[in-house]
Image (cartoon, rainbow over all chains, first blue to last red; front, side):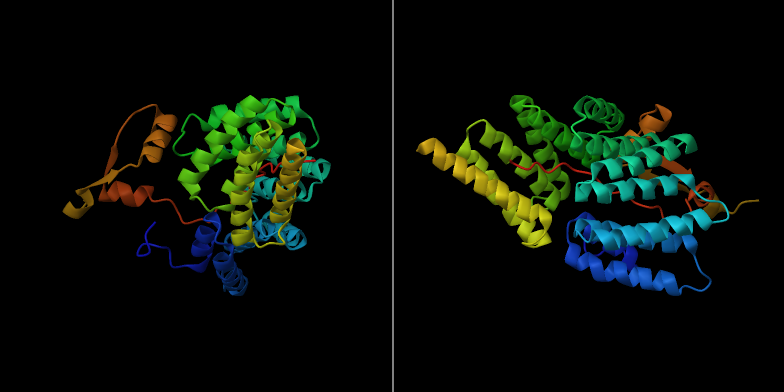
Length: 276
Length: 63
């Protein structure tokens, strides 16, 4: 999207910056959109729910999990109080609540939310892409609990749905490839992991740009795969790239930057031991 | 009776992703949609904000 045809309303523009990983630019816009939605006369519940949810997504990206959860809970309360509650929107909020627990590492708590979201959406007849996105979210939470077979099956099912329209779903496909690659790496299938992670990096770089934090997630995973295969030089180079992106986009204290730096340090230590 | 402008055809060229969406939904292939102004006005989706969902992406920890 060029500068000239950028959306003018703060909520849409804030969501656009967030999708690009430009979180510092997104935050004031999403907060302004929420303030406007809260002050709207007559009140517009759907617009307020969208503004709350959008800021919740950003807070999760920035690791402000308590604030994100409070925003999602307000969204949920608003949706459930509506005269004709939209069950698909409610399913999305449960999906997002599960996402906070995934980021926190409380996978069992997240699983309960994700299962609820998926069940609500399936019952409401949600579109297959949204159902597939719910499956991926649930699979990641099962993966975190080392329930790899169940997670792998769900990733595969979701991937088949997304691949019916590969250009439209490129971002979703890249996310599944990242998670499947990471799952293979955890199970010691390093060659399979590397193939999927290389594909995911290329797809993310093409769709999100080279400095998006989601690219750094996959670079980190690919670095670890190389490190485990004994290619310390390649691992170190990829970790350095990922740390740079995380620190630039999320800040040096963000949990993803901290984890990636620790991984890089272990890679350097392992390289030193191998040389000794 | 409709005015001439309501019968004017508007051609909307579809992106690759939109072509896939049309094919997925209808089974038909096409590079563009052609609608009259009247049809277009009837089909414009209301601007209801939809909620976006997050992605649970795995970040491996080396331990």
